[in-house]
Length: 190
Image 1 (cartoon, rainbow, N blue to C red):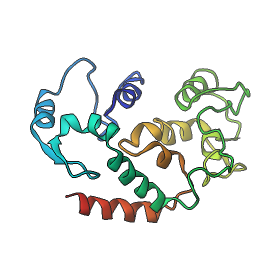
Image 2: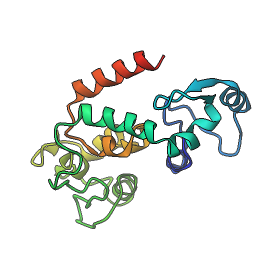
Image 3: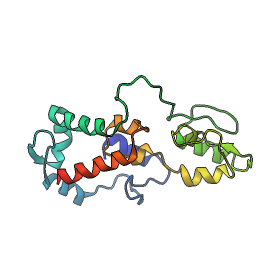
Image 4: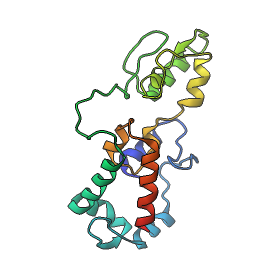
């Protein structure tokens, strides 16, 4: 994890791992994992230079061939050019569907609704789901509070680790194409 991703995992009252969802104990170091990262050798997919995993992040940031490699993968799975002028809906802040208070992030909306609207039985549209391309802006949840607890316990972005930012934000990329590209690249990277 990079520091910002790890911080997102540590935000909830009961921090969990972004991959396996096991409980995290802030402050305790995974020494065995650190040693493995420092002693495992890998090859840059851009320039084929060999190095230890612990050095890969700084190398990738400065390797122009690695940046080209990443962009090839992004271009292969997107339907439109990355720099298109289409407008993206706001998928970062949401209004409360009960009281219309604005600018909640996903976690903030869940906490707000639990604190102020837990007994409200009114059927409402989930603003988080409605902002996604697959979401129906007219669908009213029969039990919105249960929906929040089951569907939105964590942010999608928190659990998508190691993917380049343009790909993360392109919700219109074809999922089958992305999966095929990831599988192809993982076989090639071995």
